[in-house]
Length: 252
Length: 285
Image (tube, rainbow over all chains, first blue to last red; front, side):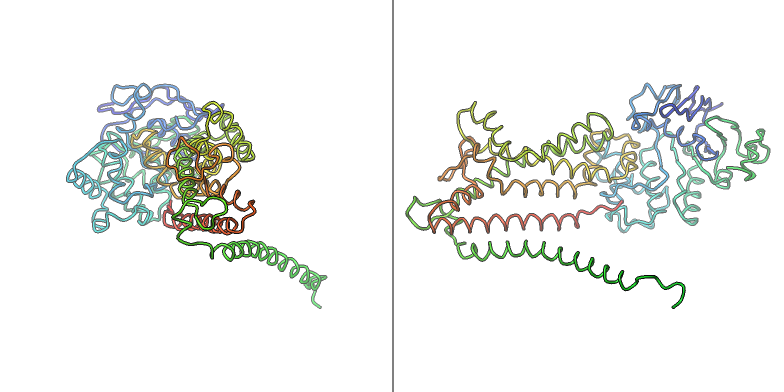
């Protein structure tokens, strides 16, 4: 694929004896939005977490195969470097509760021990918060605790925290599943805005969401990649019967 | 009588009332014991609190007056050095246990901590006597601190572990996903989020050792003179209470009661601090 940023080679992830991801080969386009879809337990989130090397926190998890970021195998890179270049937004908003809104946005730098001048910091914070359309809502109380925000605002803050690090890829693990419809719409709008400037991979159960914001859609089933194509094609003319059944709501 | 009427309702009501009053009664008697003890100590001791107690060293036997400045200084010294020794170790062990749950080694450590909690303080005193006092050839303030530090460990470890377990893993993941190191994640995300619980564990530990005499008998020993040198023996408030209360002199009894009031007030103060900081540092996830 032209402009590939991520490529997996026979990616297999298992937890103990349970093989969850069964040899995935796929390429993710740069500056594209790729949606990962499929019924629960199909391995979408597991793949996402493999890209960010988060499985290392789980002792029984085992990742085999290769994942390339550009041409580097991320399993041979320093985990910290990988995670700095690949941002992640989680299912539930998880701002740092002891930090203010401002500190949360800049936390990627402070937690990495990167020293910045005050005006640099101010600039990064303002820029990131504007990108996630949160600036107008919080600019007058940046010193307030991040947990004082609503769930939707917290999730946008988490997105801002990831965006501030200027990552090459942002992974989004069902970022709207814990939010109300209004906040969901806001996040979707936002992802739509970010499209074209960032490489986004979004795991979602919401088909309208996938159809609306993604360029490419991957359909997973029981740890295998069944279909991966332009979003339009997957939704209008799926090749695989299972995909068709899933998007027409017959199972999943 | 409708079919839904319950058989023996009257009897149930009576049982219910008996149970409720039993719970109330036992709770009240427990509280009453605490208050009676406090009242008694303060009634006996508050009168003997005077400036001399805080500002003078003990007078020789037979002379009235004097105070326990040496013991107050000694207690502060022994306890604070014990805290300095125990807190880093205890918090680290707590972090280890919270991070490595279910592993064999952490199960063993947790068991060891439980055993440590059950070891009588006098035994810890003897062990430190054999390990430190005998080889160095003299009683010393620091050997007392070490004995107390060992006693402080279990509450610090347990509070740290239990606090950290309650912090959602998503928080740790959020930090790691930003590329932060394990060390910074622990120091800047996990510990601040758990600071309230960890802090109260430390205070509980201090409260536990502040009134200990047994481990100090063989270590810090006692010293009628004011001493700031950790290599020399010192008096402590509980030690003075022990010695004075078992003496035949009325004036020493008076000072022992005064010491009790100081000690009890210190413990009440520590518990108040815990309550204040727990609510102030409460972190919402």
